[in-house]
Length: 268
Figure 1 (cartoon, rainbow, N blue to C red):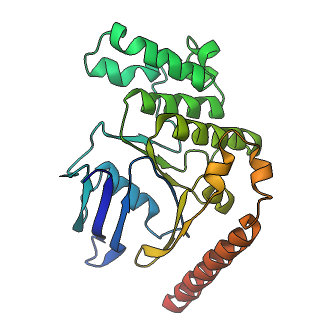
Figure 2: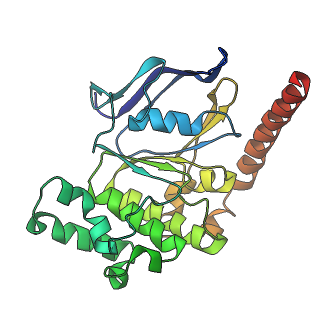
């Protein structure tokens, strides 16, 4: 079966004092090829833990991740990761960063050059390809990180708060770029965010997770990502149902945070 399946995933972290933290409990879902899913929830709901398990960085306590019919047992080029901080190579220029994956596979420039140059063009980096990473703004660095991920041609792109550190205007521009690349490449994307608005704009499917233990609380299927491709995202925010869904999710997460705070006070 094609696509990505998360099957009854649980994750428990055992602590040195003999206690443990149940980060995830019985999480299951399936993503078809080309779907865009945003994941939202209060701190401690296991969003990043789930993403790291899908990436192969963590082995779950229970359950399985299946990618295109085979079990995920570790990192692989079929799953690309874009971190909150770009994790770029500061000593390389932009083009060298973007082409790093194909070069490490032993490919010759004749094989990857045209694709890398196309990605530099699509992400607006062509005029900066010879610049050092430290010469770029945060938004430009995230463009490099996204282009580098795409240069590896993964089936699934995993994004962990990739736009969280950007200013509002740059973040909106990057949101538009993510939507454009999603449609142009047909990649499956899972995006973790703390922003309800971002989750609504970038989630064809939106997953709200609840904490202690981390689990799926509610899933939405939304039209706003499709509406936002090539459009003014501020106009999308005025679309029917957007404000109502935003308020519903904000209330949901607010109640979870209140429950967490009350639980913490009881435990003191």
